[in-house]
Image (cartoon, rainbow, N blue to C red):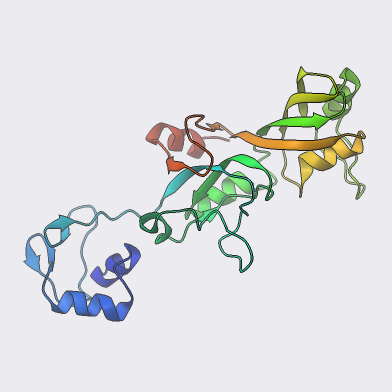
Length: 237
């Protein structure tokens, strides 16, 4: 890999700024100054330092965010704060993107990565990756609704959903439920409840495939996935 590409990838400035940095002689590969940006190094064998500080190279970044409400699942937006705006610069330099979308007012688990292959695997309609949500519903959710969801409901555009698992935790004037869906249509959970005459007033994603939301993350907080979590995700079929 080229040394200038590494420095740009890690947020050390534009190509011009990186050139300047290299000219000054503070960038070293295995303790030898390197002034030519086109010089190559081996990310697995060579050590690159600036001012003696080791620069780690990683191709991919995998972040678990507890998405707060009011923030949109996009990489950029001129009107609203996006989930990428929340990231520290050290993480944003990898140009990651959210895997799928959570509505603006929906909270909870959102995976952010720059690994296109894994993203495709998780979002491919053929894969039917299960996603589980906790929701508060206006109105009483009944066993009839559980059956309807189990059979698949017809949305406002005539689309019939795949079977979904609905679990009632508390039923009354408002009901607490958990629902697991196998696809990701636009506003799907909200529209499924609309189809049975109910309204979602709070929605939070708890899991996506084998990946569970870390409940110790406050809203707006994120962390890198552990190796175990990443293995689970990559081996999930």
